[in-house]
Image (cartoon, rainbow, N blue to C red; front, side, top):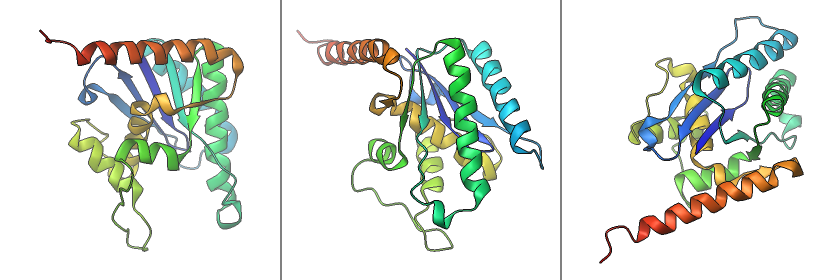
Length: 200
């Protein structure tokens, strides 16, 4: 099964994983935008870049994105809210045009699934939980090769985490339910058979 993960933002992280292979095989990167790119150009380019990704790596069986929230709109700049939503819309519309089932996972949910319940990241220089560095460190521990640019590597790392946690996705279009349930069944069947490999 092939999964494509996205961490939507102005520089959206992406990760492509064939679940039959080890986590270290995950290919990842960032859909970078030129400095000063406005909202229209960013949406335009993200759609084109996602199309190119799909053509390069092949059509995935499922795609997963970090779910966007309006809960903190009062403490966030307009651009910090607009770009993730804009990227999400561009990615989702491209996936829909290819007929690729997709779902979303809120940050709080994929972090529990990826790091484990009770995990607490170190604090950054502002005294806030540094989830970005934690994602990078965990991906490096898993042997995943991240982009060398430290300023954007966390976007790719979080996309990797989303791809790994795909089964926790929430669907937003009912037409994708049969395909998603089939993928979950395949995963459960494969996991069950693996438990008994080598048994006498």
